Structure formats: structure tokens, C-alpha cells
Image (cartoon, rainbow, N blue to C red):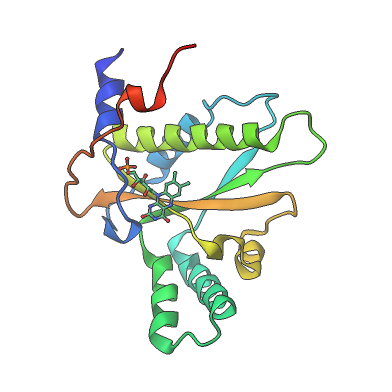
Length: 188
Ligand SMILES: Cc1cc2nc3c(=O)[nH]c(=O)nc-3n(C[C@H](O)[C@H](O)[C@H](O)COP(=O)(O)O)c2cc1C
């Protein structure tokens, strides 16, 4: 295997979005990462995913969606909890939302579309690593909240699956112990 690819795979670690600082990818680097996503396998070539950037000037709107989702989940949430929900929107200098586009009536099952999205995400994470940026993923109940769906302008057949943050890690993460092939591989 190409050592460069191996080294990138091994070096990539999830970095919590709050730990991702500036600098993040500029427009040219983001273009490269999106081009990497486009290399993902895609059964039926349906393009069953898309990514939405949340630029700095829309972070307050994302914060409002986080706060609204919290208030719906927990109407008793106090001002501190609400502020913390809003604050999440400020994490990571470059923030994308990964969206599954599951147009009904296709012969390709949803699971395969999800796999394609996962591959596209991993391609982006590795491309970011190659460009010198750290990355992290964040999910949670707010992604499917009505206010979030409104903000992202999701069609009924679309689902926001996770946030992807890119930036510069505020500290070096140690490699994690990886599963051994014996844990996930067998032969008939
Ligand atoms: C779809 C998806 C959603 C994730 N959501 C979160 C999250 O909400 N919070 C979090 O700390 N990590 C999240 N992660 C990252 C994992 O915690 C991380 O990949 C795992 O700890 C393994 O670490 P590594 O990526 O450095 O190998 C998510 C990962 C995936 C694939």
C-alpha cells in the first residue's frame, strides 16, 4: 500500500469540534475535500448525499436551531443550558452538515446510500488530513429537530446525519488502540 495513504489513515483522529481552532481550510482546500468526497463509491450513481457549509455569518442561526431543539427536548432547560446549546454552533472554523438524500422509489436500498455517504465522509476526512487539517464528527438529537430541518432546507426524503468540523487541533491526540483483524475478520 502507498505509505502516504497509510500514514494519513493512521494519523487521523477524531477531534471534538470544540477543540478545533483556526486556521481551518480555505475555499481552495474545501474544494479539494469536496472533490475527495466525489470519489466515493455510489451504487446506481444516485448521488445520495450532499454537504451544507455553515459559514460564520450563519452560526447564530445554527445556534438558534440548537437552542430550539433543546427547548423542545427539555422545556425546563435553564439559561445556562440554552447558552451552551447556542455556543455549540460556534465550534470549528469550518463546519459542514452531512445529509443523506434518500429519494424513494429507487432500486438501491437506504443502507447502500448510507454506506456511500460514509465513504464520502471518510474521503473528506482523509483529504483534510492530507491538507494538514484535523477533523471531527458530531451527531445528536438536534439534527432531526424541526428547526434544524428548516434551517437546512431539508426535503422530506433528506436526513441530516452529522456535523463535520475541520480546523487545527488544539493538542496532539495519541493514536488509539485499533481493533485487530481477528475481531472483525473471519473466513468461511
Ligand atoms: C456518524 C458519526 C457520528 C459521530 N458523532 C460523534 C459525537 O456526537 N460526539 C463525539 O464525541 N464523537 C462522535 N463521533 C466520533 C467518534 O466518537 C470517533 O470516531 C471514535 O471515538 C473513534 O475515534 P477515531 O475517529 O479517532 O478513531 C462520531 C462518529 C461517527 C462515525
